[in-house]
Amino acid sequence: MENVDLLFFGAHPDDVELSASGTIVKSVADGLRVGMIDLTSGEMGTRGTPQTRKREAQASARILGATFREQLDFGDGALRTGREEELILVDVIRRCRPKLVFTPYPDDRHPDHTRAGRLVTEASFYAGLKALETGLPAHRPQTTIYYLQNYMFPPSFVVDVTKAWKKKMRSIAAFKSQFHDPKSKEPQTFISDPKFLEMIEARGKHFGALIGVEYGEAFVTKQPPRVDDLIGAYGGREV
Image 1 (cartoon, rainbow, N blue to C red):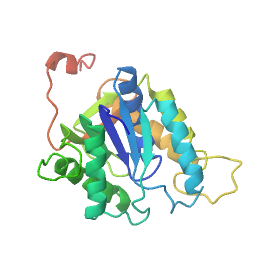
Image 2 (image 1 turned 135 degrees about the vertical axis):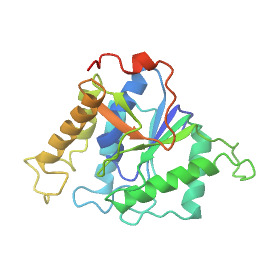
Image 3 (image 1 turned 180 degrees about the vertical axis):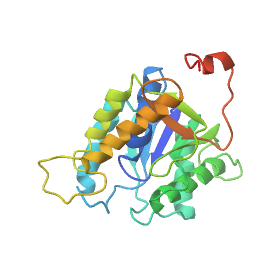
Protein backbone atom coordinates (compact mmCIF):
# COMPACT_ATOMS: atom_id res chain seq x y z
CA MET A 1 0.00 0.00 0.00
CA GLU A 2 1.20 3.48 -0.87
CA ASN A 3 0.06 7.05 -0.34
CA VAL A 4 -2.92 7.84 -2.56
CA ASP A 5 -5.30 10.73 -3.15
CA LEU A 6 -8.45 8.59 -3.21
CA LEU A 7 -9.07 5.28 -1.43
CA PHE A 8 -12.01 3.09 -2.47
CA PHE A 9 -13.37 0.35 -0.21
CA GLY A 10 -15.71 -2.45 -1.26
CA ALA A 11 -17.26 -5.25 0.78
CA HIS A 12 -16.64 -7.65 -2.12
CA PRO A 13 -14.56 -7.74 -5.29
CA ASP A 14 -16.58 -5.96 -8.03
CA ASP A 15 -18.56 -3.70 -5.64
CA VAL A 16 -16.48 -0.65 -6.53
CA GLU A 17 -16.51 -1.45 -10.24
CA LEU A 18 -20.30 -1.49 -10.47
CA SER A 19 -20.85 1.83 -8.72
CA ALA A 20 -17.72 3.98 -8.84
CA SER A 21 -15.13 2.71 -11.32
CA GLY A 22 -15.84 5.46 -13.86
CA THR A 23 -14.80 7.95 -11.20
CA ILE A 24 -11.57 5.99 -10.68
CA VAL A 25 -10.79 6.11 -14.41
CA LYS A 26 -11.50 9.85 -14.56
CA SER A 27 -9.44 10.53 -11.44
CA VAL A 28 -6.44 8.60 -12.74
CA ALA A 29 -6.69 10.47 -16.05
CA ASP A 30 -6.68 13.71 -14.04
CA GLY A 31 -3.39 12.69 -12.42
CA LEU A 32 -4.68 11.42 -9.06
CA ARG A 33 -3.43 8.28 -7.34
CA VAL A 34 -6.13 5.76 -6.43
CA GLY A 35 -6.04 2.74 -4.11
CA MET A 36 -8.62 -0.05 -3.81
CA ILE A 37 -9.38 -2.29 -0.81
CA ASP A 38 -11.74 -5.30 -0.86
CA LEU A 39 -12.81 -6.22 2.68
CA THR A 40 -13.52 -9.84 1.70
CA SER A 41 -12.63 -12.25 -1.09
CA GLY A 42 -16.29 -12.89 -1.93
CA GLU A 43 -15.96 -16.45 -0.68
CA MET A 44 -19.72 -16.85 -0.16
CA GLY A 45 -20.55 -16.06 -3.77
CA THR A 46 -22.58 -18.56 -5.79
CA ARG A 47 -20.29 -18.35 -8.81
CA GLY A 48 -16.52 -18.51 -9.04
CA THR A 49 -13.98 -19.11 -6.29
CA PRO A 50 -12.05 -16.69 -4.04
CA GLN A 51 -8.91 -17.43 -6.07
CA THR A 52 -10.68 -16.70 -9.35
CA ARG A 53 -12.23 -13.52 -8.03
CA LYS A 54 -8.87 -12.29 -6.72
CA ARG A 55 -7.32 -12.73 -10.17
CA GLU A 56 -10.28 -10.97 -11.72
CA ALA A 57 -10.02 -8.12 -9.20
CA GLN A 58 -6.35 -7.57 -10.01
CA ALA A 59 -7.10 -7.61 -13.74
CA SER A 60 -9.83 -5.03 -13.20
CA ALA A 61 -7.53 -2.81 -11.11
CA ARG A 62 -5.00 -2.78 -13.96
CA ILE A 63 -7.71 -1.71 -16.40
CA LEU A 64 -8.75 1.11 -14.07
CA GLY A 65 -5.18 2.28 -13.46
CA ALA A 66 -5.29 1.89 -9.68
CA THR A 67 -2.00 2.30 -7.84
CA PHE A 68 -2.75 -0.82 -5.82
CA ARG A 69 -5.56 -3.19 -4.86
CA GLU A 70 -5.44 -5.21 -1.65
CA GLN A 71 -7.82 -7.81 -0.23
CA LEU A 72 -8.61 -8.22 3.46
CA ASP A 73 -10.38 -11.09 5.22
CA PHE A 74 -13.29 -9.66 7.19
CA GLY A 75 -15.66 -12.51 6.34
CA ASP A 76 -18.05 -12.59 3.38
CA GLY A 77 -21.67 -13.17 4.33
CA ALA A 78 -21.15 -11.93 7.89
CA LEU A 79 -18.72 -9.05 7.55
CA ARG A 80 -17.04 -8.50 10.90
CA THR A 81 -17.05 -4.98 12.32
CA GLY A 82 -15.29 -5.47 15.65
CA ARG A 83 -12.44 -3.47 17.16
CA GLU A 84 -9.83 -5.68 15.48
CA GLU A 85 -11.22 -4.97 12.02
CA GLU A 86 -11.61 -1.29 12.88
CA LEU A 87 -7.95 -1.00 13.87
CA ILE A 88 -6.85 -2.76 10.69
CA LEU A 89 -8.65 -0.10 8.69
CA VAL A 90 -7.22 2.67 10.87
CA ASP A 91 -3.76 1.40 9.94
CA VAL A 92 -4.71 1.18 6.24
CA ILE A 93 -5.96 4.78 6.23
CA ARG A 94 -2.91 6.04 8.13
CA ARG A 95 -0.59 4.19 5.79
CA CYS A 96 -2.29 5.40 2.58
CA ARG A 97 -3.17 8.92 3.84
CA PRO A 98 -6.01 9.50 1.33
CA LYS A 99 -7.63 12.89 0.95
CA LEU A 100 -11.00 11.21 0.25
CA VAL A 101 -12.37 7.79 1.20
CA PHE A 102 -15.15 6.07 -0.76
CA THR A 103 -17.28 3.26 0.67
CA PRO A 104 -20.75 1.70 0.22
CA TYR A 105 -23.70 3.69 1.54
CA PRO A 106 -24.31 2.26 5.04
CA ASP A 107 -27.89 1.22 4.28
CA ASP A 108 -28.22 -1.36 1.54
CA ARG A 109 -29.96 -4.60 0.57
CA HIS A 110 -26.81 -6.63 1.28
CA PRO A 111 -25.91 -6.48 5.00
CA ASP A 112 -22.19 -6.67 4.14
CA HIS A 113 -22.50 -3.40 2.20
CA THR A 114 -24.22 -1.75 5.16
CA ARG A 115 -21.61 -3.02 7.60
CA ALA A 116 -18.74 -2.00 5.33
CA GLY A 117 -20.08 1.54 4.99
CA ARG A 118 -20.43 1.96 8.72
CA LEU A 119 -17.06 0.37 9.53
CA VAL A 120 -15.10 2.46 7.03
CA THR A 121 -16.83 5.66 8.15
CA GLU A 122 -15.95 5.07 11.79
CA ALA A 123 -12.38 3.94 11.07
CA SER A 124 -11.82 7.06 8.96
CA PHE A 125 -12.70 9.20 11.97
CA TYR A 126 -10.68 7.18 14.49
CA ALA A 127 -7.64 7.28 12.18
CA GLY A 128 -7.38 10.99 12.98
CA LEU A 129 -7.10 10.54 16.76
CA LYS A 130 -3.51 11.26 17.77
CA ALA A 131 -4.00 9.54 21.13
CA LEU A 132 -4.84 6.27 19.32
CA GLU A 133 -1.36 4.86 18.87
CA THR A 134 -0.82 2.26 16.17
CA GLY A 135 2.77 2.94 15.18
CA LEU A 136 1.69 5.23 12.34
CA PRO A 137 0.98 8.98 12.46
CA ALA A 138 -2.66 10.03 12.72
CA HIS A 139 -4.47 10.95 9.52
CA ARG A 140 -8.10 11.84 8.90
CA PRO A 141 -9.48 12.05 5.34
CA GLN A 142 -11.32 15.21 4.35
CA THR A 143 -14.56 13.24 4.19
CA THR A 144 -16.12 9.84 3.57
CA ILE A 145 -18.07 9.58 0.32
CA TYR A 146 -20.74 6.93 -0.25
CA TYR A 147 -21.42 5.20 -3.55
CA LEU A 148 -24.82 3.66 -4.26
CA GLN A 149 -25.43 -0.03 -4.89
CA ASN A 150 -28.91 -1.57 -4.60
CA TYR A 151 -30.82 1.21 -2.87
CA MET A 152 -30.97 4.64 -4.48
CA PHE A 153 -30.86 7.92 -2.56
CA PRO A 154 -30.85 11.55 -3.74
CA PRO A 155 -27.20 12.20 -4.68
CA SER A 156 -25.10 14.93 -3.12
CA PHE A 157 -23.19 15.18 -6.39
CA VAL A 158 -22.77 13.37 -9.71
CA VAL A 159 -19.48 12.84 -11.56
CA ASP A 160 -19.39 13.03 -15.36
CA VAL A 161 -17.91 9.67 -16.38
CA THR A 162 -18.87 9.77 -20.05
CA LYS A 163 -15.28 9.47 -21.30
CA ALA A 164 -14.58 6.74 -18.75
CA TRP A 165 -17.65 4.60 -19.40
CA LYS A 166 -16.15 2.11 -21.85
CA LYS A 167 -13.23 1.41 -19.52
CA LYS A 168 -15.64 1.09 -16.59
CA MET A 169 -17.57 -1.60 -18.44
CA ARG A 170 -14.30 -3.35 -19.34
CA SER A 171 -13.39 -3.43 -15.66
CA ILE A 172 -16.75 -5.04 -14.86
CA ALA A 173 -16.29 -7.55 -17.67
CA ALA A 174 -12.99 -8.60 -16.05
CA PHE A 175 -15.14 -10.45 -13.50
CA LYS A 176 -16.02 -13.17 -15.98
CA SER A 177 -17.11 -15.58 -13.25
CA GLN A 178 -19.76 -13.21 -11.93
CA PHE A 179 -21.58 -11.64 -14.84
CA HIS A 180 -23.41 -12.89 -17.90
CA ASP A 181 -21.56 -15.53 -19.88
CA PRO A 182 -23.73 -17.66 -22.21
CA LYS A 183 -21.09 -20.42 -22.09
CA SER A 184 -21.02 -20.64 -18.29
CA LYS A 185 -22.48 -23.74 -16.66
CA GLU A 186 -22.62 -22.15 -13.22
CA PRO A 187 -25.95 -21.33 -11.53
CA GLN A 188 -27.78 -18.22 -12.65
CA THR A 189 -27.71 -15.37 -10.13
CA PHE A 190 -29.19 -11.90 -9.86
CA ILE A 191 -26.03 -10.31 -11.26
CA SER A 192 -25.33 -12.93 -13.95
CA ASP A 193 -28.64 -12.20 -15.68
CA PRO A 194 -27.95 -10.05 -18.77
CA LYS A 195 -30.61 -7.62 -17.54
CA PHE A 196 -28.32 -6.70 -14.63
CA LEU A 197 -25.68 -5.08 -16.84
CA GLU A 198 -28.47 -3.40 -18.81
CA MET A 199 -29.56 -1.88 -15.49
CA ILE A 200 -26.02 -0.61 -14.82
CA GLU A 201 -26.05 1.02 -18.26
CA ALA A 202 -29.47 2.57 -17.63
CA ARG A 203 -28.43 3.83 -14.22
CA GLY A 204 -25.35 5.48 -15.68
CA LYS A 205 -27.48 7.22 -18.29
CA HIS A 206 -29.99 8.32 -15.65
CA PHE A 207 -27.33 9.88 -13.43
CA GLY A 208 -25.74 11.44 -16.49
CA ALA A 209 -29.06 12.98 -17.50
CA LEU A 210 -29.29 14.64 -14.08
CA ILE A 211 -26.20 16.73 -14.91
CA GLY A 212 -26.71 17.04 -18.66
CA VAL A 213 -24.11 14.48 -19.82
CA GLU A 214 -24.24 10.98 -21.31
CA TYR A 215 -23.09 8.98 -18.27
CA GLY A 216 -22.74 9.79 -14.59
CA GLU A 217 -21.96 8.18 -11.24
CA ALA A 218 -23.81 9.41 -8.16
CA PHE A 219 -22.46 9.84 -4.63
CA VAL A 220 -23.83 10.83 -1.24
CA THR A 221 -22.03 12.74 1.51
CA LYS A 222 -23.18 13.79 4.96
CA GLN A 223 -22.08 17.34 4.17
CA PRO A 224 -22.49 18.93 0.71
CA PRO A 225 -19.41 19.70 -1.37
CA ARG A 226 -18.36 23.32 -1.82
CA VAL A 227 -19.17 24.79 -5.23
CA ASP A 228 -16.71 27.49 -6.34
CA ASP A 229 -18.16 28.04 -9.82
CA LEU A 230 -21.92 28.25 -9.49
CA ILE A 231 -22.51 29.08 -13.17
CA GLY A 232 -20.11 26.39 -14.38
CA ALA A 233 -21.80 23.82 -12.17
CA TYR A 234 -24.96 24.19 -14.24
CA GLY A 235 -23.37 24.85 -17.62
CA GLY A 236 -25.06 23.24 -20.61
CA ARG A 237 -28.24 22.50 -18.68
CA GLU A 238 -30.45 25.37 -19.79
CA VAL A 239 -34.16 24.69 -19.27
